[in-house]
Amino acid sequence: MTPAENVRLPKASRTATWGLIATLAALSAVAGDPAGAAPAQKIVDGVPHIMNGAKPEQGVQSLKLQERWRAGAGESDEVFGLILRVELDEQGNVYLLDGQLSHAVVFAPDGRQLRVLGREGEGPGEVRRPSDMLLMPDGSVGLVQTFPGKIIKVSRTGEPAGVFEIGGADPAKGGFNVLVEANCAGGNLVLAGQRITQTQTGNARVLFLASFDSEGREKVRYVEKTVELDLTKPAISEKAFSFVYPGRWDVAPDGRVWVAPERNRYAIHVHAPDGKLEQVIEREFTSRPRTAEEKDRVMRVLEAQVRGAPVKFDLSCEETAEDIEQVLCVPDGSVWVMSSRGSRNQPPGVFATYDVFDAQGTFVRQAAVQCPGDAEMDGLLPTGDGHFVMITNFVGAAMALQGAAGKDEGEEGAPMEIIYYGVSQ
Image 1 (cartoon, rainbow, N blue to C red):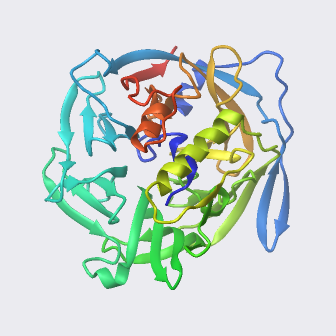
Image 2: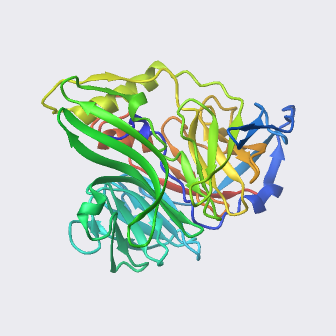
């Protein structure tokens, strides 16, 4: 069981060189939007809390995107199932993880398809329904298999490169594991997932965000949460299973972990690689009420997850959206945050607005990204080099794959298309 909101947004590249900061000349201030004041600071239990207001110091700035190339939907021979992750390598090649087709498609910076990595199966270099992808410390590409939780490694040219397992080769060390997300930066390999143990009346699930060494041994646990599933009183609430995935954490280039552990509190905890909580970054924020359509979508996902179960579950979802949807660390030390309001009710021409914080936790500015698209259904991912990837019909495809699509989302799903954008100069 994973949080119902895992259909909200695909995941962005976190490991490539980020060029957005170098393109600040293309950012223009939005007239009439006032800047905010400098943040205050207070100490809570010995930990500095950076208290930002509702408005950034430098106000809102616009970032205009220009299409560079596209693939899928008749533009190429490539057919996409469900793109879940975008990564860039040192040469600027674009890796797209297709969770439905169980492989990664690699494109050159100019849009030429180069190769396909991995395939569905149980053999060397094969994976089943990967949930995430990362560039491993040894230079291989890691395809994260949800269950049984492990990382299938392939070389940049597609050859099998081994398997990374929690606990190493001894399953007794790892237990019954599910992996959801993975990232590596600054020498810190961090995984998010669940460990499941059986109980007399059901099971207990420990949801975790932890650092691991190259042999799969856990080093540091940053965040954890235990959820008991009692089949004598079968109930699943979205709130109970709400955790830091999908996308509410990242690893900075220095190895520090930035994570938003609370669903309805705009607060980012910054942990040193060794686990020490160094600071908490807060921002004034009011949780956004969900629409009836959003609540219906979440309920359909929950229903799909328990469909066919031998008992009837009592299901419940939250009235508000989670305050933080996505945390993205960039090499210059700044952090881009997508709030629940950043992708809704935007001004004309603006697809989404990011909150941008500096390395010290100051709410510096907001970046209003301008490009065509439907923020309710499409996904927009910063690639890490000053470009963005638009994934059309992402929500519809994700809902259809989970057997939860409604009539307005199209059970068959419109063809998924990839649009690669650069910053307009």
